[in-house]
Image 1 (tube, rainbow, N blue to C red):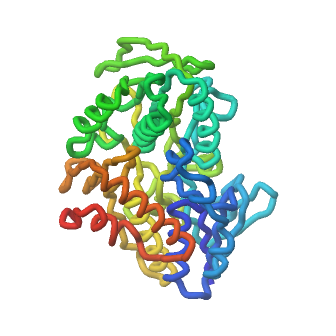
Image 2 (image 1 turned 90 degrees about the vertical axis):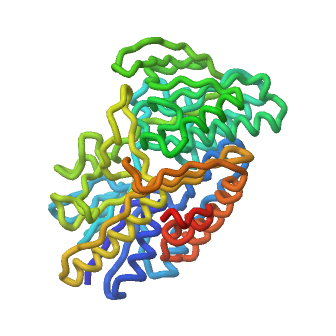
Image 3 (image 1 turned 120 degrees about the vertical axis):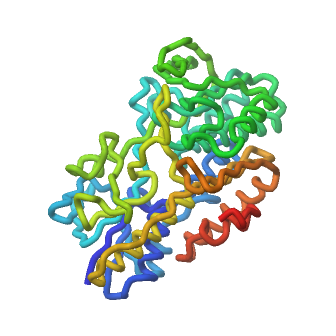
Length: 423
């Protein structure tokens, strides 16, 4: 009997647990370890930030749902991974041994890289976690009571730009609903070299379409931007040219600011010798397995993927839900093969598919593969994307509650957005 431990219970970790339990013989034990005892549907956090969703809408206790499928659950932070000894040390001092470890922790939010940023002791908000989004909503309500400038965007080294664009447009819409948009100047600040880069080198006509939408919604923007410091009510931003030279320094006043931080690997993972790159992201081979530790696997935001191109300001590469589920399925197949004394052969399809809500409309893109040049390079917008994302939210939360082990994206999301022919 083997003990497979999954570190993390987000989009990847929960899906991995259900797929593993379905695939493996029942003599094998599956355990999920997560710092929090509740699942959070992160893509809905921008809605939480303006009060369109509450925690009960997008979060639920993990243990009862895993228990139904005979999957163990431990709600503890992991403080140390002993990769040589195949064991984990939990925050409460207990140890958990494993035969195979699947790392799906997501990122460490590196607010400390920009002095004065972040929701805990800093002056900017975040929608990266549910508690951050709830704190941002409180700050948003204060903005509505006393309107003033807003700054939204992403810091240097951020690895996911969709939520920043979403939040900017959702915020715009809710301010309009409350009849105070005319009192709130908005600026979008991003490390991307141009609007619509998305960490992907652009997708389809994303640059033109997103620039047009920002302009039509009276949102100014600054690209190639590196936030150097944040003080109460003031953000300091260096703007770079293509040669990497500072060409302008901005001082942006704000009453409310939501800035996505740079991502790094979580501490317990980053500290494992030879497992990660310098930013703490797990290095994996074509089968999602560590080249150094043959019983450690990784998927999702925590893995190392090089940037698609050199940019004046560091821009990370996003890992979308489609890609994450594909990685998870590959790992499950490969762990199953190894337990049957076979060589791993399954590989993930590193494609990007995204539904981004924009208040009363939305944008969808398909990049196959994610890194250019691509076989499919498609970007469209319309009200149907907003409807599709709401449907996706409901489906995915139900999937995580019921233990549906079938990958969602692979079979349904292309059909949902009407481009299954592009696959």
